[in-house]
Amino acid sequence: MMGDAQSSKPVVNSSKSAMEPAKTATLDEEKPSFYHDAKGFHLRPHTKPITTDYKVSKNVLGVGINGKVVECFRRKTGEKFALKVLRDSPKARREVELHCLASSHKNIVKVYNVYENTYSGLRCLLMVMECMEGGELFSRIQRRSGRAFTEREVAHIIYDICCAIRFLHGMNIAHRDIKPENLLYTAATGDGVIKLTDFGFAKKTDFTDVRPLETPCYTPYYVAPEILATEKYDKSCDVWSLGVVMYILLCGFPPFYSAHGLAISPGMKSRIRSGQFAFPSPEWDDVSMDAKELIKGLLKTDPSERLRIDQVLVHPWVTGCAKVPETPLRTLAVLAEEKEQWSDVQEEMSNALATMRVDYDQMQIKNLSDSKNKLLEKRKKKLLDLKM
Image (tube, rainbow, N blue to C red; front, side):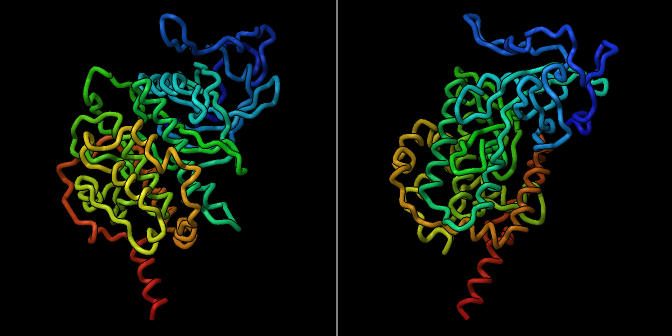
């Protein structure tokens, strides 16, 4: 994280203000800072001050794994962009490179330019990205009013996320942190496009290796069981995370829930490892069997048994998303009734982003029924009160 580095002005070897375009500025802004050629992919950040080409705002749009995202405006046109500032390091270079490499896909946030500047005496990388005006996936859902959220809509959302994952996996890139906060919309209106962002945990995989990824970096709610077992893992962990996102979209709460405010509670870890989850009533009563069967395939404990992303995309519920029943879901009601509880869940997830490793040996096994899922307990109590 960059702290307040985003609000500092770049160091410029000139008597001119950093916020003032240099008179000798050329059209090198138009030269790409990353490109492909016959030799492969190249990342060559611009070294001139970003303020030559963009006016940088202090308005924070969001916080990623490695840095804040602020508004910026292209001086020539006034067009609005999002600017991510990362302290330069091998890890940051990897994030920038992999995001640039993948940003041509329609369901991945587009990167337009990359700069290498100095902020507060620190060398930083600055990514100019498209500004996602529609905000996060669940924020958009919570803002709805007057119309139901349906299973067919979830199917369309999952289809788009699958397309992004398939594109990444086709380039042997594992995202490793797919979750609602990293799924953003281009616009707040109904025609907004959902896109995947934040490549802070992304990693290039070696297709010659069966399961090449070893670093246990993750956000707990969306972590696959083989990561918790400290085994090597591969792109199948993205499919697991997809299953968790799909589950939450269909009912409003996660299949694996942390207890006592821990990043990963003992019960949560035990359930993830054993693949224990349920489709409780009444939230799941009207959800189609096709959707439930797909979730079962996505959340398989053994990655060798888990569906691959190409298999997910030919599943009837996904490939036939336009024909999925328009069944109204209880997701909106759950999120509305337990708004404060859901905020706590999101905060817990955000706090866990800083946790790069977990002391697995200190975790104790605990069953799901004892996991103190406050959200579900509260809803069950309400239902009992209504029946009395």
